[in-house]
Amino acid sequence: MTALLLSIDQGTTSSRAIIVDQAGRPHARAQQEHKQYYPAPGWVEHDAEEIWRATLSVCRAALKQCGEPIAAIGLTNQRETTVLWNAATGKPIGPAIVWQDRRTADVCKSLKDDGHEAEITRRTGLLLDPYFSASKIAWMLDHYPDARTGAEQGNVRIGTIDSYLLWRLTGGKVHATDATNASRTMLYNIHTNLWDPWLLDLFGIPAAALPEVKNSADDFGVTDPALFGAAIPIAGVAGDQQAATVGQTCFAPGMTKVTFGTGAFILLNTGPTAVMSNHRLLTTVAYRLKGQTTYALEGSVFNAGSTVQWLRDGLKIIAAASDTEALAASLPDNRGVYLVPAFTGLGAPHWQPDARGVLSGLTRDSGAAELARAALEAVAYQTHDLLAAMAEDFPGSDQVLRADGGMIENKWLMQFLADILNAPVDTPNVAETTALGAAYLAGLQIGLYDDLDHIADHWQLADLYKPQMTAHQRQDLLNGWTAALRRTI
Image (cartoon, rainbow, N blue to C red; front, top):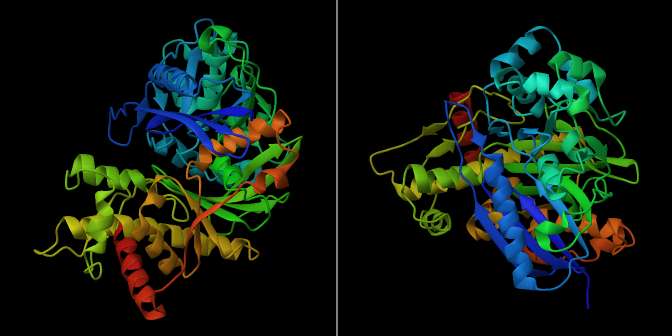
């Protein structure tokens, strides 16, 4: 009997549990969506208690489907989203503030105006932006009743979603995170691998309330036996994009992956060197194993799959996300219609938190097909902009892009992506690479895998997309995109 690993994948819009074997083959799956809250313009919140209930539910459903013992659990999560909770009860003391939330834009601007951004970037590899956890935590400490006093006195815990779930899974015995999640808080020094006292002081955050930072494959305790009928080791934790990097086995410097989910996130492995970007890309921890840190350059597109959700739920011009493929393919070209989906600002390499979406080039004949195509094309254009910046920051980057996430099911988009990048795009046999990466980390910790090369042996190609577009077509499309971007900014 092969050993089985349970991967908990807690994402922006849903929680999933996937059970895989040592070869990475899925044996059971369960998924449950949770509600998105928008209490004010630019504000995005989650109910962390609802996330906990959904996580429990999907784990129990997957375990019931499988019916076999689990060797270990890997956990991966939406990054930067922040929770404050009561140390005695485990209950959140207010809404979780989501990574997309922009409420602290003014705070970040004030810190930038005071000249702090360069030093923050030097220590964390991040840009001063409300995207990251630090300003969210400071806001929560100041606005949730008794939060600051509780954190200072040890009654309130602070953490990202992984820390919150670890606390609940272990019955309050473990308050921990891993280096990848810590590196996204804007409180963690990626060079010293410690919570940074200068940053904690700058944002006014008590160190005692923060979690212990561990390796990505490590001992994170065991589950409370009352939850799943056994004390299962939790042996791997990573933020979702870093977990996808592991799942795509991008272990060599220069290897690059993009994950298309709510947003789109590109990570380029730079090995043991923390490469600082000249194009406002982020320097982040790709993974830390046995105390050795591997770094990455990262670019983030805030709206990818969420743009298609907007077509479905906001405009109601499609019934399902999959409808966009046939609509886009029905047109000979984009008819000059461009969408810049800056619904929550623009991410790298522009970093314009106040930018808002622009739809340009509309005529009386424009309809659902043009909007669907513009939404898909926007994903490819933004990916192009990030990869072009990365190639200048790290000239040794691989020419092949490994793509994963729900949007790789859209074959029209994957072909257009290869065309606009003028580079091959690989998609893997197991599309759920985020969950797979968390499982691989857990398996590495308990000895199922000898090393990273052993894990890499399991990666399998599903589809290879090669560029077919002429250079003239490509440049015309990119010129149109640049003009639309200019209108947005």
